[in-house]
Image (spheres, one colour):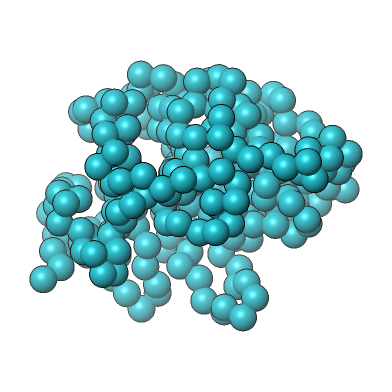
Length: 248
């Protein structure tokens, strides 16, 4: 039986108890408050559910990750970075990015980025935990991505494109900044052929969680006026690089 989380404090089952089918389903219930979300990500757990579902928590095995130095920047993307007329910004249009990521795509009219999820991650953004990388062309927002930054880890959530390679431009800036300024790993959650083509690989869940134990504090993060105590390698160093080096 799937565990139901009802404690007032974020308490998750061991990720070893996650189901094999569907892969990684761990628990239901709980909250999407900042405290719950930060503790979940610190343990290698993330929420993913539809409007008609309760909050569902996942920790798949294997886990897809992208090491910044292994990002595959093909020649066509290099040309777009040099001559595409893109401008890249950090945290200037978070709500627009998450709204664009939530928009229906192709024949699929549904989205897992529900209103409840958008509100939760917008609050994380206001607290300095969630971040967006925006790609502009001709004064228009044409692509971007968003996720959570904790220490040297970026937990990617979603990305979108309205122009060729626009989301790849955002990812290229993210991987370069992380590689040059102390970032270690981008969590891509689930395997997709698209991410694999960009250099992402799958690792065992245990290996992924060991990465988090090594790079994030053992104690739970605490919230003050600055919501998270700085981990061993502050995320701000590589985030700031995106903000200051964003013109492509």
